[in-house]
Length: 282
Image 1: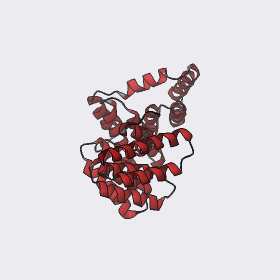
Image 2: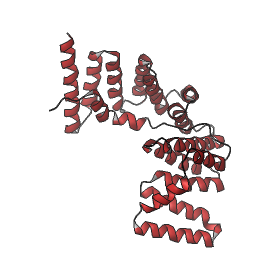
Image 3: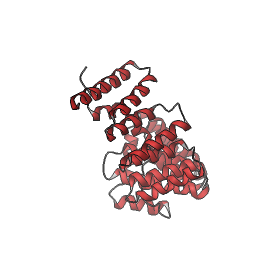
Image 4: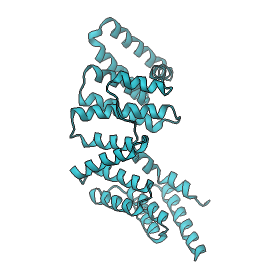
């Protein structure tokens, strides 16, 4: 088996890290959805065009369904929320989160509830994670921040929303300290908030505070011993520290929980590569 590079391992076991770093974000939310949309457009991103392109990705059956719903909405404005809900659901089923988010935001602007704003925020966040261009990404971040901020206006005790908002600021804006502050607020209120603790660990790695990262990941394991991916994160941090013994022991722990033969072989190959490099140094 060909030896795996460090970057290849991170692609294998670090997919989990990327998934967990589910916490990227926009800048300070604007006072209204209209202002937020204008801000996104000034950055060269047009959400109306996104919806048009999203519709083109749908099956002809789904396109016809949307056309029928839009006709109903035009003829019966009293059913507009119902229509937008149905269209959002179609985009959800097609796995086009941002298009769905646009319709959930329209609903939230008409009927401002925590649930509606969360529906929009989650999907803008998913759009942010999958964005591959420098224009779309900040636009999604702005929208996600705006919607999460609306959620917290309605329910300041929603720690999951505050966590996501914190990651948005920390990972997607030029004000990362605000995001870190929000995450620290969450763990000060609930030290057992797994996602907030985990993201503080990721951010500690990013800033080179490796011992703090290990402490955060150890806390996550205490909160949820079944979160086996944490062992791979800890192993990688020890590798960054140059402590190959502890890195190997954590990768072995991680491997012990795996059942997929391909993944086990990949981790075995990486452990062997670490051991070989250790012997070469010695």
